[in-house]
Amino acid sequence: MEYISLRIRYMTVILAACVGLTGTALAVETTAKQAIVIDYDTGNVLYAKNADETVGPASMTKMMTIYLLFERLKDGRLSLESELPVSEKAWKMGGSKMWVEVGKTAKVEDLIRGIVVQSGNDATIVVAEGLAGTEEAFADEMTQRARSLGMNGSSFRNASGWPASDHYMTVRDLAILAMATIRDFPDYYHYYAEKEFTYSKIKQPNRNPLLYKNIGADGLKTGHTEESGYGLTGSALRDGRRVVVVAHGMSSVRERSEQSERLISWAFREWGQYALYESGETVAQIPVWLGASESVPVVVRDKLLVSVPRNARKGMKVKLVHLEAVPGPIAKGDEVAKLVVSAKGMEDIEVPLYAGADVEQAGFFGNIGAAISYLLRSLIS
Image (cartoon, rainbow, N blue to C red):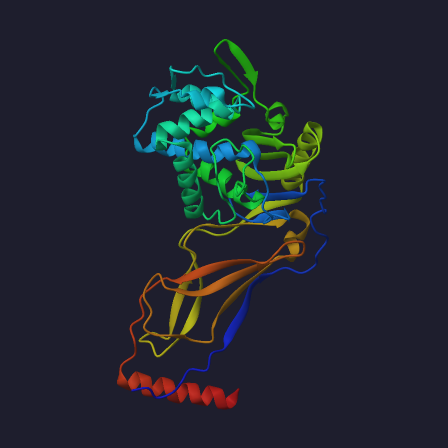
């Protein structure tokens, strides 16, 4: 029997607040038409400019081709020593080439380097046909896998990034793909840091300019077409902290190099990482309505690490937001509250909180008592 309807009100409690803002992260500008900078460890977006506009990704497409190839290696369907046949279509493919030979086979490890280092369009077709039968079927798989990774602004028509109708990505999706590659394939990601590769007696350098700078860069891929301009998806690691950057739509190789480095340097210089709670740590006790217990602990599921502008650290606020009283019963692991982290110069960060214990529903007399108590509180308030 229902005795009373709970009036839904939210409670906001400031758990940590430090006053005296002294500044914020120095603003950054870029000539890139589309750009995004993400702190890999926290997932916080540090900068975004037209990040959800669709663009022609050119050879940055190859990151998706390599992702699917790495999946086959990780699950054992292929090995680095596996050989894939070279078709006439692959051999004839224009643009940047690995220089595979028609009628022969190419080793998977060589194909990885041929795609990552040499940006070989021919090598992508060898991989696509070897993994899916046809490049068209492989492109469909690329799109489907992209969706499962949360890349909702991407559509693929080929494995190389050759300009085609309905072949597009966003810089946000490119960043998602870069982070997934680093996260999912720690045993293979190192190929993105290689600076040169020789195949068929032809030595070619990696086109990623960040690898030749002393900034901690270890990947990932450049791209260029006349229509889309110059783009780069990069990542750098310094003192255990990783930043991912995507910059697109620039007018020259030099501009691409300068703007990408500038964004990475800005992110490391102006932003810091701050640990707030450890995995499973109790944040607070919040009231329970119609439960066998009067309160329930709320916990963070994973270690809470946030990115905040360094000069705004002193003004950071952490707020607990929850229903005035959470209705029972409650199962351990239920999402029952959230933390909102805010500071000047950044978008609010919202983190879900979960019940740290089971709370059974109150019995008959408990319901009566809770209803009376709630009515009295409502009259007073």
